[in-house]
Image (cartoon, rainbow, N blue to C red; front, side, top):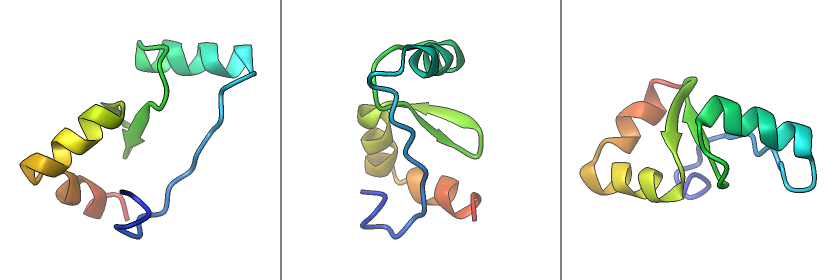
Length: 66
């Protein structure tokens, strides 16, 4: 979805890197992937991202990040 919206993003693969995954889990409070942040605000995972889109709340968040 972010690619379709032409929003730049950084993907940080944590699979196979125990230390990096632990850092992500500590920061997000979750161990599942993906975990998504916009403007340093933790959004959650993919389900939460799509829920924001359905509510019309994603684009305003994305536009404040540019």
